[in-house]
Image 1 (cartoon, helix red, strand yellow):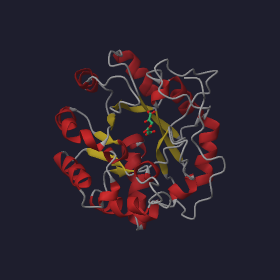
Image 2 (image 1 turned 45 degrees about the horizontal axis):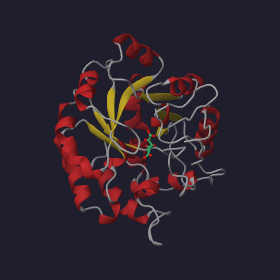
Image 3 (image 1 turned 45 degrees about the vertical axis):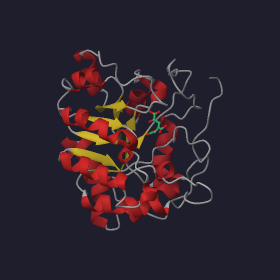
Image 4 (image 1 turned 180 degrees about the horizontal axis):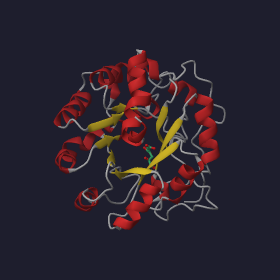
Length: 296
Ligand SMILES: O=C(O)/C=C(\CC(=O)C(=O)O)C(=O)O
């Protein structure tokens, strides 16, 4: 792997929608800069640099106040780039790490001091070589107080994830709703399965994210403005409004063939959360409860 890829929009539009004061972009990443923070030898993609300055400029452009930076697989279990971005944010960012399950308690405490509030378990075979459930459960049992676990999986393995998720001893946040097929509609099999997972525990949260990944243009159907995503996700947000968060997913790893306009992603918000009350929960109250609870 040698070619470095660019997966983000060079000049995203200004959204028509204005987020409420204090809004949190609760799912984004940083890449490098590579000269300072080399990518993992196991990385499945090699992106161009997308560092904290670019992230914070986008945050301001889109009208957000804070970021939650999620360690991307291209940086493996070395969280230095994520920690560096958090340190440069002047308190406006916190993060989710990816760790070697054998990590020491002292290192977990160091991550906490650096602004990390959760760890991510990635089950996508195209992104990681292995996902050892037994080791994940062990490390999940000794996280610092107040942390949660973020899980990334696709809808086809939801059933086999149930027992694992049930055993996690801290709150769980599901990335991109477990990637349902939104073209099935709000009552489709994937959404029903995801709802039943949410109903299995009151502390399973989810990210109503990634219309670009879940509603791509296929044979001329779908894509921006992602109508199928809006139709399938709005009822979920309404029904589980106290445990849903939102993020841009910038710099959109692996989306180089269908790069979304971040302004348009923000304009999805009032379509999945139509009232000011819902928008405040989605963008402020809920992410603050997970990442800055001491400020509430
Ligand atoms: O950014 C995301 O959430 C989704 C990703 C990338 C990713 O998760 C990672 O590299 O860790 C994807 O589907 O390729």
